[in-house]
Length: 377
Image 1 (cartoon, rainbow, N blue to C red):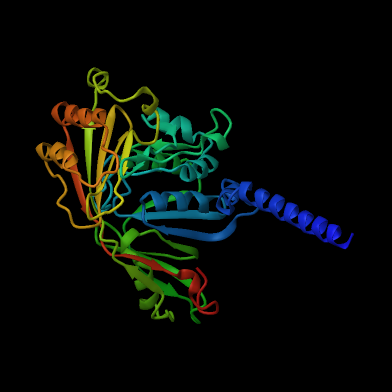
Image 2 (cartoon, rainbow, N blue to C red; image 1 turned 90 degrees about the vertical axis):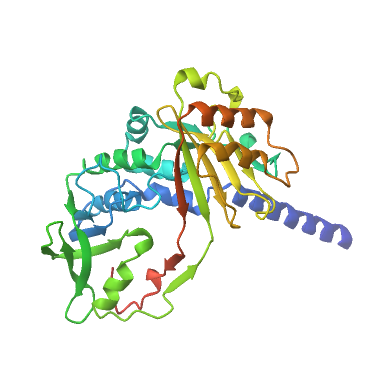
């Protein structure tokens, strides 16, 4: 009798643990739940100005979020006046980008017409199936976890065009002002409890001081100028506030123009015409080969990406592309012949343009680790 009771109790505990574990595994991730706070303005906006330093996609998203919570938002960038002009200060402006489903879901909460605006500009909302092939072997996607038609979507679009659309939508917010210029520094309050003003150098060389600052957001990208501003203003900044590493990443983005008459000649399987990537090859050993990825983007354009972390010489002209791909070694399963044929047609008829990038040393500034009593940003 005692043994039966112990067995029953142990079985009940196992059942409860398994049930709870299954619920936890199937519950939405915390970052998905946090998306629900986006696009929900407070009843009363915070007084003062939110100053966003940097007008790239990070700056645009930050300014839009701040617009829900502050009386006034000012976004500052030296190239912000003309949205049609290419942004020369953004390293990855013409490089391949992945606007993952997490970005899409967040942007939809910030702009109710996000999908319509992107589609009107030529963007594509494709199934978030990146067609990953690890050493040539396809990796499975969790289609069975979603109802038919409910699989997450990614935005397939060139970064340059997506940024233009986001920028025009940002300016619809009545409390957002753009200012052409470069932030040169900040000035602290008397006891360095917070930031009092922001100094901006305008295109004509004059300087402007923005007072009544409630928040400063550093969206200057790899420059990460905010740390320098704080030090110059006399704030106590810990020596180990920045963590850096060299990812040793180089990549080349090749952009092809694919008019309908060329598109119908490409032997791409029909099931892959509306996936996030047409084909993606990831090596099991990056010393053997780089990453290769092909995707459909906006307005009859396709992009081919080569990404390397080992120091290979990546293709820089059209005649180097096909030999580079066919020369990949170490595949457990060969790259499909239809993909080789697609690349051959694109290089011959797609008017390829090349954008090569060597990523600089990456760093992370732990602003949240600043002494609580020293600064409020």
